[in-house]
Image 1: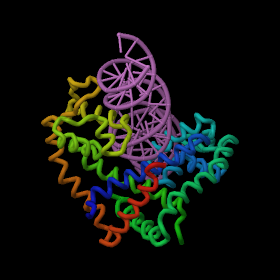
Image 2: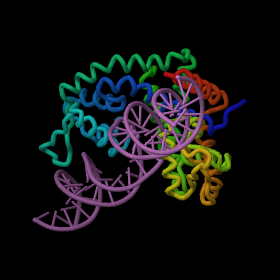
Image 3: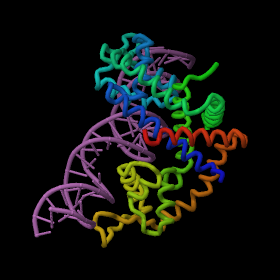
Image 4: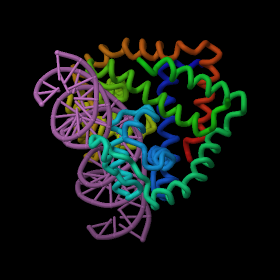
Length: 143
Length: 143
DNA sequence: TCTTGTTCATGAGGGCCCTCATTAAATGGG
DNA sequence: CCCATTTAATGAGGGCCCTCATGAACAAGA
């Protein structure tokens, strides 16, 4: 029997939840969750020059969401928010040694899990799946 | 250039967020959000016999999540929680007239949006995409 | 009957995402 | 130089999801 559009969409949601759950369970023991770690990596790479708004742009999420994630990272002492002397509206983000430690600790784990998740698809499936996701994403971006 | 596993997974997240945003924007004006409306439909179909735990099972989400959604639905007076006389631990869920009105008001909208989202894929793409999602979901369910 | 184990709903606390409103600061004309 | 606009970050309030802990009620064996 063929799936309805609604069923497929419901399954996308379930898939997202299942993946996040899997990542977070493993990674929560090592410092930061997946979304947080991705921000941490970006902050580290930018060497103290990144602003909250940059992260929002880069990951395509709302600025308010970034503030919230940074609150958590700062609470865990993985980053610090430094006031910018030349523009007092913004704060530059800097990773702490503890933050760098968390990044290097979780990097291999993230790779590993990502790979384990996707390897259930054979190469052709993987490619067409990636294309379909891209297509769906593209057509719903601006809507 | 080929996408990494991590990139594909990140895009699944973005897709989920974009879809939910699209649904919620339209549906929030009509009473209940997507997840809430799906629960409402189930509650309506069960004609007063459904428990919170049944919803958790049916949708594959945690009981605590259901409590939260039901709080919102009850706040909006779309459902009521009725104590069960034979087993005082549980509460039976009943849809209100306002709830039924919300369901019938949003039903065509949900169908419409679902269809608009999925129609960017041609039939073969749609099928292989659905299969891939299924496969990924299946292999990550228990993990 | 009296534990012990189970089930149900929920409190408490988080993560990740959103919109809208607000404050503070920078900036570009008049 | 001053005001209007724009930009940065965040407060307030929601939605959807999780785990772990709690309390009440039921079920069943000793």
